[in-house]
Image (cartoon, rainbow, N blue to C red; front, top):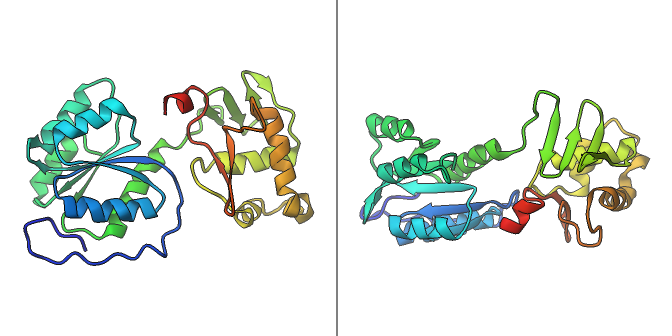
Length: 260
């Protein structure tokens, strides 16, 4: 369990060996406790996240001005201000109005939690906390960023639309020439953007299809999918290979990737 600084409590040594990278999302950790941010940062990086740390609100604003983050983990008490005021500032700025925020605080009174949530925090975690609970809450908030089905059951990724009802993929409005098996494989990947899927996981998700349709030919199907959905199949930006692990459908594509 991680304790807030100043308590004199020991910080339990964390084991990273059992953590498998499941996603790559950028997190901004705002806390002036360098021991805690070091431990938490290492833990979350070992779980597959990219983590930047800021020890003050001034550093946090500078980090936001220089890059984009999928989630902010915000301490309530900081040397140059209050996390509640910072959250209020975020919600009042159009650039970060919808920025997911997980608030941390050693002040665990119900009124503190209520106030934090009323000011726009998406979740609130009291110190001390278990690192695994923090990781679980971070993942839960990030799931809100996953592409959602619209009324026509379409997954949208920039210029690429995947129409589940019509069972077609369109790039710039033009139908992509995919077989039924290839379309299903694309859907499996696209429904878990940012997550590395092994060949076994892909096979498991495709239960009900003849095994010979995929098995060792998954790589061939991926190549054919890339040939119709990528601008440059030799340098893919949508379906990426993770050596020794499997495949991942990119969370950021097209203009988003350039801005990332």
